[in-house]
Image 1 (tube, rainbow, N blue to C red):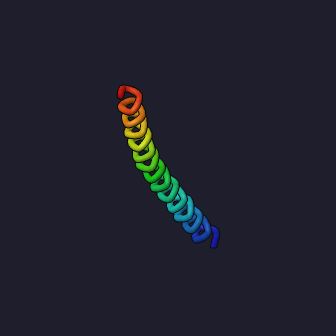
Image 2 (spheres, rainbow, N blue to C red):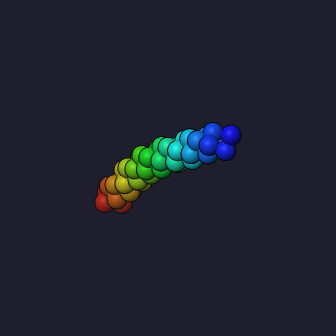
Image 3 (cartoon, one colour):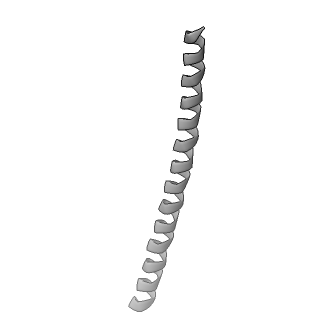
Length: 51
């Protein structure tokens, strides 16, 4: 059942691609959240230096 194995392999590849895409999206939103925190921390630091 070579055809069946091929089908299973294709499904596996598709699942892996979907997972890695999801991970990439999660990493992007994580990065955005961290960047926001960093920007806020920088703003606070600048305000403290100004006073």
